[in-house]
Image 1 (cartoon, rainbow, N blue to C red):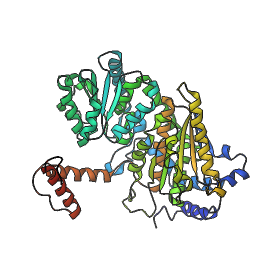
Image 2 (cartoon, one colour; image 1 turned 180 degrees about the vertical axis):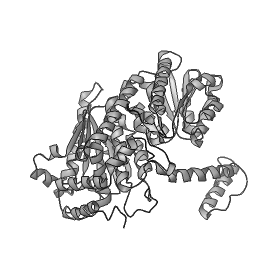
Image 3 (cartoon, rainbow, N blue to C red; image 1 turned 90 degrees about the horizontal axis):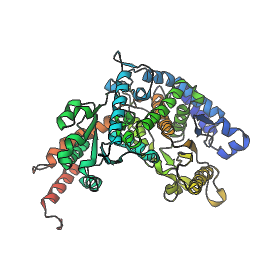
Image 4 (cartoon, helix red, strand yellow; image 1 turned 60 degrees about the vertical axis):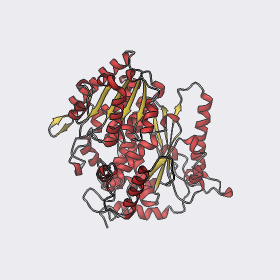
Length: 515
């Protein structure tokens, strides 16, 4: 047994789980008129209601004891202090410094002057681009965190957009890139290449295609966000348009850095600063609030409870706001790339489940597709429902319809209709924002970042590396020259060899002919 599964708190939770086997959430409400107040938390207009869960006061107490026993507070403190919490890569993980205020040292040097200088450069650049009439469109080239974060923020804050139109291209599929570029004019299109190493195959492939498309405008219409300034300069980006990226910022946490430049160009740096302030407010709450009153901690503990003690292998994320349509995809990378590991930080194979499968879609559409599984399926699927109380749209009636569905679905999942074959007793968290402002969005995204951190601190897993992703990249890099040559496939396994041979034979035939 691992230190986690033989710990006192873990064993107490396992025994407690058996006592709740026949418990119904609705009965817990019937026995406690103040259950909503006891099991909900608030911060600056953000409400987390976790009362519709299979937990009692004893459950919450035991979960908090687990967090304390596993040293979550100490792990968080080390992260905020700039310690090398990414042990496998010997790096700090200081995305919090990007939206912070206090001095933070990495290898003895305070990083905050660099952060403030970069924000000032971003502001000057945004003012220049947004203040003129030359740039009408921005194309952002990135992949993974360099794409999902900026794209999510740009879409979520679309009601605030008053700058150039911003487009995103992540797929290396040339047809997709061509569709993005087709309606645009190279002379009035700014292209931002976001790659930490400036060697990311997919991003650089698209960047070379777009540089050719820009033609003579490339010299003044290229910008880059990277930790490899030399390669960006060699690519043809002017030095004043290269924005820094540091090794203590992971890709899936990079939207708070200059990687957020596309979003800042869309909504302006004042709004981007509000986003940072919202995230900083959640950072400070996470850093200082006691575990039982700490939003990220309690949200994380709900995930631990279902994943490790109820066998829930998946978790649904359901935003009732079309502007948050990309939130499930962003969370998939944040959570599954961080938590999808079978080895603890000390190298030992774990004897407990770690990351759950994160999936979801905007709630109103999802009600007409996969909600059937949530209501009557055989598997327990916890879910997060997310909505904003106020809508910026003029049609308040449609927002009320959406919110009626938000409240109705969580109630239906909990209560069910046993006489009609709906068992109910399906758990959910509800997250309500007063309004989807930049500040509120910053709080929401930081809430989930810290939730993932807490879960991995409990599991003893490093949430800041991604060795499986790197393995896939190495294999793909080795295969590429072979695909571009006429030589026979190298001997690997029968399936891979057969697939490559079929692919190359197909390319050698006349298009449109029979295989």
